[in-house]
Image 1: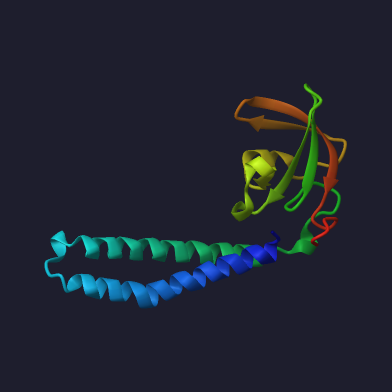
Image 2 (image 1 turned 90 degrees about the vertical axis):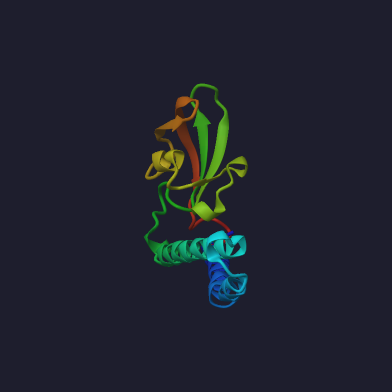
Length: 159
């Protein structure tokens, strides 16, 4: 999934939530009010809670769309680890090679090696070049890696 795919997905969710906020929730709230006393009206409380959640989610989506829309792919370095890079790391203790791709939070899937560039591991990798050693703080303790290979977003097939 690329940046444009994420934006399409977020915009679709935003449109659905805005439709729910303008059309469905007012109808649910109005129907719940018809049951009478609002102090003990579960349907009304559920609809109002949903309305609050939808408002919050819409605000979050608008912020994410704005932030992701401002990503200038041409400003992303071509010679060091940055957003969109696939990184091959060699554990200096075990010799094991791990592969991570630095992605947007919406794409994170640790079991597939997709980690957020804003995560502790992602932040420790940013800016490093092939051949450099990197200290990464993991839940199991600090690990030393060598950056064996970098495939930047510019070199990736979907770019």
